[in-house]
Length: 149
Length: 149
DNA sequence: CCGACATGCTTCCGTATGCAAGTAGTTTTA
DNA sequence: TAAAACTACTTGCATACGGAAGCATGTCGG
Image 1 (spheres, chains in turn red, green, yellow, blue):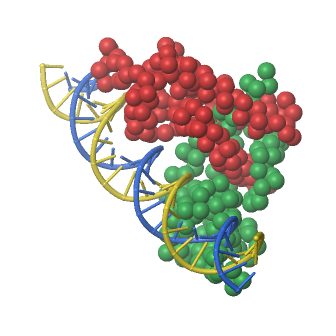
Image 2: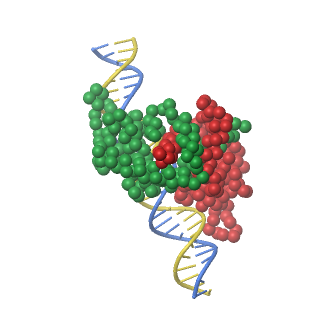
Image 3: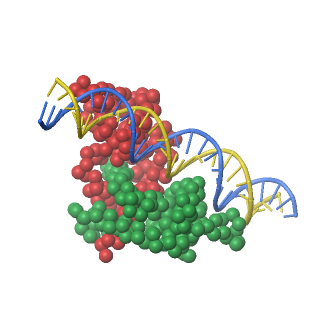
């Protein structure tokens, strides 16, 4: 039954994510002092026009809540990786802008992540199979804003 | 470059997981009163021999810490879904056993999850593509114990 | 023009989680 | 066989997160 296949794919997706996050997150933290979610936030900013996004758009792109964005940005501001910027047209919105140092940091961390991604696929994977996996996974969020890669 | 493809696949995996969890988890909670992680825990027990597992094995299968298992089991015990059982050979280990009511509940919730999985793949997916995705994702954790599905 | 509603963000509170330390029990080793 | 090392589990502490409420601002309809 196709339902069973769909369930298997879903369960394996959750399992693979937990497995990969458990391997990648500690390394990322020890090398660059960034959590995985922080890196994903900075990557979103790096790929956004003018390297800046509204907080509500960040929340949507990361599938998280606005309050999480608010709190995640505090240490990133203290570290100088992002800066706050107001919108002259609408006083409600607060942009999160990636700074120069933030850009440098995210590029370093992206290299590390790229290395670990290659490591995760090192055995048992052909190049076209990795591309196939990326294509299939991309279907879930291809229509949504914020598709890095 | 193959590194870039691997990075894309990894980023899309994280993104797809966040997207799907955001859709599935609230539904699961409102219908069955279970969080996604609780359901995954109960599913592990349901597929284990004698419907029971040591806490340390549960932690390994769910890629989480032992302390999380300890705390997650408390409300599940209160609800009567799981029971504690000692090992006569080794007084250190505490088995977590799925009860009758727990089995019934997990089977209901599994049906819901199966429906939502089918829903997630409803558009833009052929049956063999879903199977392909499941096969590819399974490679990450196929060698590890606790592969449901 | 102004009252009602909508939007963007922050704060408060409850919950979930990992890590380190602590406890109890088992295995290894000298 | 006794001390040391290891294992399974629990607890304390710090952190991360979501949802509801609150606040400021913007928009719409009469």
